[in-house]
Length: 125
Image (cartoon, rainbow, N blue to C red; front, top):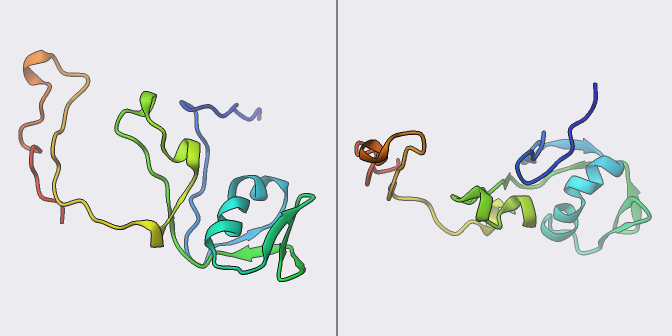
């Protein structure tokens, strides 16, 4: 089976890491997860050198994530800088919680039916 070429419109397949997920460390996983392991997992001495993950001076062959991560998609996907460009967001970087749906538009509907009125200002529990 031929693998698809990734782009901003064809992004994936992609597994979003969660706390406790164990991944084998190789070129493919380091390409996707290496930066978040290095930057956000809380290791004082972690680096990626010559395609290897080094933590506290020891080469690591598999890694278990310490926290959950999220993929953030902009509301205007063709004109948004989001996780497709800057990567996963660690759970400890999320500062708020949505309270309600401000606006909901049906892109397929005609002009008179574009706004989804039953969702407008709907509370999120």
